[in-house]
Image (cartoon, helix red, strand yellow):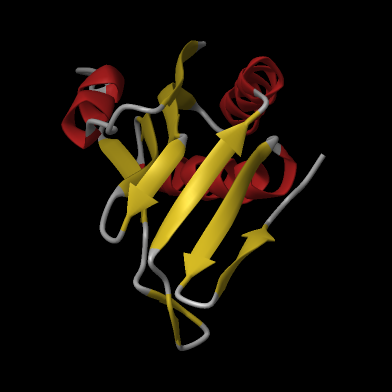
Length: 139
């Protein structure tokens, strides 16, 4: 399995993630890019703040990547997540998956982001003009 994981306070490099998964045998690369949006339920967002239990998060991210490689014929997968303070338009997460065919890449990529959001100990705080709220907290 060819797996690339990263948790960083530095901006994520989308093209570098695509480069990590690009292989001559790969006919399909699927990329999910999660960005900071300007509102939640119509309420303006000023910024997001992400915190992670890094060692546990990386272990869980590896488990997700390994599971994806087992469930679908994936060539390579990269899962990179940002921590710290992010502003509107910043990239919070990049998942790139390559496979011989698009269906496997699409399915593995969707599985990776959906499972990451449910199980990886990365917490997001939304900051508004009138307060803040932690969302999507998990174990």
